[in-house]
Length: 187
Image 1 (cartoon, helix red, strand yellow):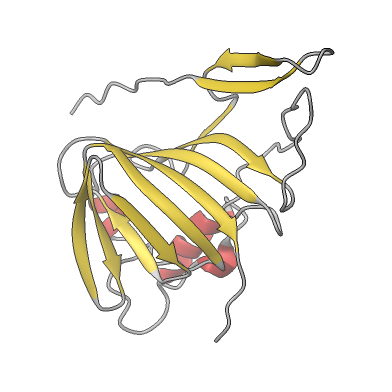
Image 2 (cartoon, rainbow, N blue to C red):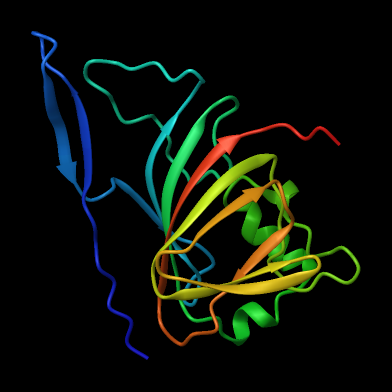
């Protein structure tokens, strides 16, 4: 199956010395990473803020991140696009330990929950975030502790710190945009 990866533009705005709105950059995302080797998802890190309220600078700079980080910064936000290839046997055969290793490469080993008894998918995970997931193209199945649903292009998911996994059973790439907002459990 030949999956053609397409790129998208990330347009960042700012202000000039006269406080007039300008385009600061217009290019594909600077940081892209394939997770888990062939058959794994590709993460396109689009932007993040390091605090809320976010400080708005006249000339926004790239943040100095040199590796993929699963969660947003503490009190911050993150937007990313993920391309999920069709799920193959390499995902289905993951153990709790190997799944935790995959999350560790993203600085999120503690998020992995697949080693818990009865986990419905090997890539189950949970973070203290509110995530808005928007399917841009294709379809994907969202798996929760109790139930699952297939979401398609145009659908939006609001994840409220829930234990979940994504399974692409469609045979084609699924591209999703995620906005992650740092949160705190009240329970």
